[in-house]
Amino acid sequence: MTDYMEVAVGIVWRGARFLASKRPRQMPLAGYWEFPGGKIEEGESPYMALCRELEEELGIFVQKAEFWRIFTHFYAGRGVEVRLHFFHVRAFLNEPAPLEGQNLHWVNPAEAKNMDFLPADTVVLDELRAGAIAQTDALRKAASPAVFPEKRREKVL
Image: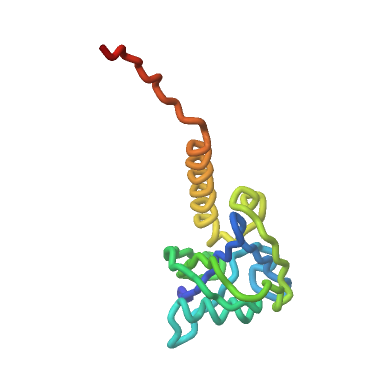
């Protein structure tokens, strides 16, 4: 029998870095890094759950969050299918604090590949890394000097 769970997840940004949270010992899947968030309660929208969870876990108040996408992951060993509603959180009040005993770390997408994230988050990390690489390439192109063909000087008679 498969259990289903709806979860709101925040990719909390500070510049080019996002907040990673390491699950404490007393939680299932302890020791894994994850994006902050949690279960959507009955009657809550994903956005409402995101705001509640980030306040409970981190003591922050969401000011600006944009829905990004939904991913579904099946944890075979636990018999649980999780549907994750991801939001980019770009503005919030208060400094994030580990209110549930978790470790917190600001990382960029490239650094995150060396961290042990929850299996449900790996697709998201891959997409964030790909986006960061594309953004870096675009910035590099924009910053390189443009090559202009020399203007032909024609004699005016």
